[in-house]
Image (tube, each protein chain N blue to C red):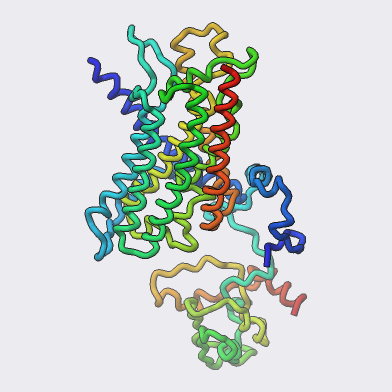
Amino acid sequence: MNWIEPIIKILLAFAGLIGGAALMVYLERKISAYMQNRIGPNRVGPRGWLQPIADVVKLVMKEDIVPTAANRFVHDMAPIISISIALSTFAVIPFGNTIELFGRTIKLMIADVNIGMLYILALTSVGVYGITLAGWSSNNKYSLLGGLRSSAQLISYELSMGLSVIGVIMVAGTLRLDQVVLHQTHYLDGWLPAWNIILQPVGFITFLIASFAETNRLPFDLPEAEPELVGGYHTEYTGMKFGLFFLSEYANMITSSALITTLFLGGWHIPFAENLGLSPVLLSLLQVGAFLTKVFVICVFFIAVRWTIPRFRYDQLMKLGWKVMLPLAIANILVTGIVLLFVS
Amino acid sequence: MGNMGTNGKIIRKSDLGFLEKIYIPEILKGMTLTIGQMFKPKFTIQYPEKRFTRPESFRGRPVLVEENGVERCVACGLCSRVCPALAIDVQASETELEKERYPIKFEINMVRCIFCGFCEEVCPEEAIVMSNEYELAFSSQQEALFGKEKLLMSAEKLHDRLEFLRNHR
């Protein structure tokens, strides 16, 4: 019977990610429309809610074109790598505290691995392969440029991302993400929740900026950069293969938001809710709701940023990554170390 | 070089203050602007259900003015001559009416028409005017050839446009 529990959790997380990605596509279009004083999709279903489903149906029906000179095998593999990495990163993120159901204590995360944070950093690095291989296998100069830019960008920003996480890990003293969240549930001075955004503000900002770069979203969407690179790495992709890249971008966005929530915004923690005397099951469900709300807010922030800030130039991107973000992240580690030394 | 500010002054990189150089306050400023726009009224018109109100100066498809059941046109052919897209084809014939001449054939190729309104300007009889109709979709070239039966429109319907022409020409 032990295998049923993880399967249910996997199905829930899978459905949540895919459904969430669909919701994000809808929200992206709606929010961009509202920011530009338009209405956005409103024809398919009530207020256009079914638009993502219509989009997917259209993409599935489309002809799948592979360029003649492309490397067929790699061309097919690239979107699969992208989407599988995007979906599997979520496995170690705790979306709630433990919950007691049917006499069992269930931990609300799929895989409780003791190197959770390393697992995520490793997988996001593998995720670059999807984009880079897509760019290389298409046999198209724009695709290749997009793929190259993507690898350069991800290598540059992964450094500052990893270094900004070290601050959090030093504070929490563990790589387990559920422990990182548990560490954030106490209070400073008895009233200020000890979320890492308060303990690690610089780390939060560097991590946030790096995750924008990691998800290839504006202002760092140089791998796509439609005005100069046509469509970047997915120029030569059609139909559902393009759809998979699209889906993985949004799934990555949700995973990044979930990671930001877990590391810096207290995960599933609702400040002072444990003092209200609610039944444990209700409290656990509320905490899952709190986690989802936080993720949702960060996702909307991602979208709002996309429609506000213009794209960086390539040299500006590299300058920001190496000359600003990296020293800032290292300085953050130093300061955190010194403070921890004095506190303990 | 350098970028132009909104007031036309050149802003150089060295002119930027510390807060402007660290991006973040400026980004937040930009985001308050874009998020503020979300709650402004929208410009979209729900097209098939609602139409925009066309002013009299709107140049829609050209039509022939019909008065007392017959067109005003005397088939002088000026519109055909002035048409830069060569879209108008007129053939004249005699009639018992006072105007003596009428177009036995008047055809506008709506694929060619560029809605410039020269025909309307040049017409000595105010017989061809631009209407306010703009929905023109064809499934074949043949369908786009508008003969007299499609071009005729009663003077009452075109009252606003004729009024406008009288006041502004």
